[in-house]
Length: 123
Image (cartoon, rainbow, N blue to C red; front, side, top):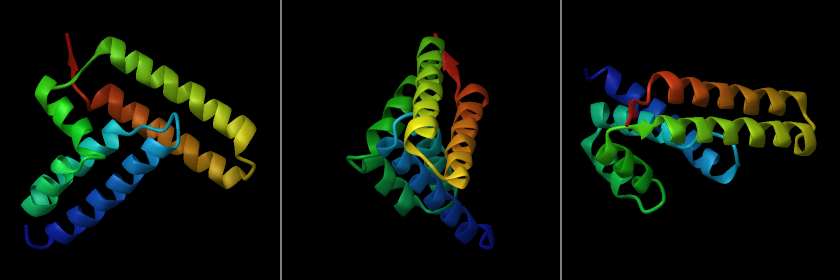
């Protein structure tokens, strides 16, 4: 496990960056990346895990998810619909570079896949 800790911390930090980016950029996923961050930090560093869940900016996303043990199907549908709409608007009207368009679309697809297949659905 000693070998994996630094790798998990780097991946957690990358995921945290994407989650924060998702807060700023409408339509990009936030919660799936922050949940991934919490899971990676939990397995690698209790200090980083405690920091992320107590952080006033990103902590509420994780704590709310943990409290409810997932999100409802209705919330998933709304989240994915909003992501698709905002990513479409962003890539059509605001992003000129093809590379950046592909990055934004790819992150949106990853977020949608995580939301659909990884994040539990509750009633």
